[in-house]
Length: 104
Image (cartoon, rainbow, N blue to C red; front, side):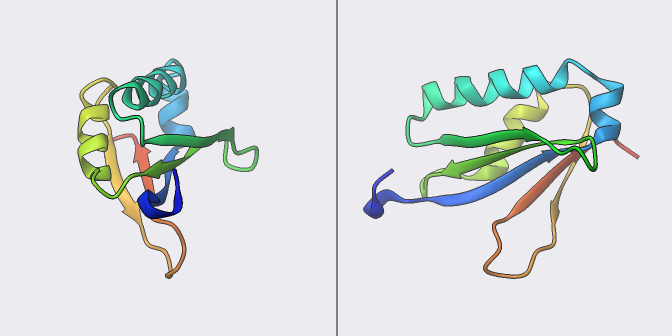
C-alpha cells in the first residue's frame, strides 16, 4: 500500500479457548484471510503469530479505507464454528483489536 491509499492496521485475535475447542480454526482463518486478499488486493496480512503467554493466535492486517472490518468479520463467522466477536477497548492511537472467542 502506498501513502495515498494507506488503510487502517487492525489486530484480529482468536482466544486460546476457541482454538482449543476448534483446533482446525487457525488454518481456516489463515486460508480465509488469504482468499480475502485474492478478492481485495489492497487488503494485507502483515503478520500471524501464536502468543505463547495466552495460547491464542493473532493476525495483524492492513485494511484499505474502502473496506469495513466488520464486513470481513461477518463473512469469516460464516466459515467457522459459532463464535462471539468483540472489539477490545484500546486507547488511541492504538490499533483497533477484535477478539474471536467461544460463545457464552
